Length: 287
Image (tube, rainbow, N blue to C red; front, side, top):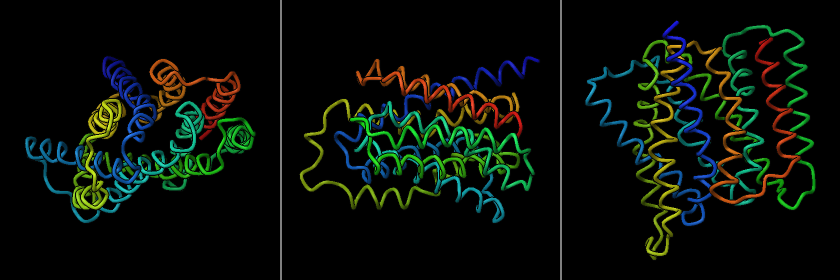
């Protein structure tokens, strides 16, 4: 029982850390281009992960384990950060968090496809309700809507869900924090090249402290520390039960967006988020 409580505690802390990712990215893209931000955050986190792996004297993954690690790297380390950074040039972080409400469902769908399970019709019913709620919200013509930003957020949720599902599988062999560390390490050469290519000719002297703070948060917390607590929670408390805590992320993120960025959180955003969270909870119940 103690392990269950520790699992929920670690998982909740991981979700709380992830909840600040999009508001921090919103701050960072004010001073860094999306490509430079994605490369720099992966490079910083990758170097920290390398130090952790060396300190812990972890064995090198075998060839079979590198395939899912490559998916984790492409989905969670590169794909999701780049797509969200691009999206946040067009929409607010508050709006983007509505789409994050679909991340648990995306993870569950890829888990079904990966494991070859056959969910009940109720699962797909809840899935359609959540998708319809997000589609209706995205198609609304509010002042903050953007077809480009909304499409990028949907793509980000898809690739991140795939990365989570593959990471959950390989975690059984390597361990939780080791999975994200090896995935980050695999991205270091590409991240270093991207940082060098995207470095502005005029330098970064004009970048404000808020953007630097955002870069630091997404590099250290969102890319590494959050995953350490998250995977630790999954291993102690169980993937299915602790995974439910992802449903709290949109609400935490909306609160941060309102408190830190002073972004308006329209009542319709809260309503749609509640519908999405309810549909995801139902879908996971019947997965």
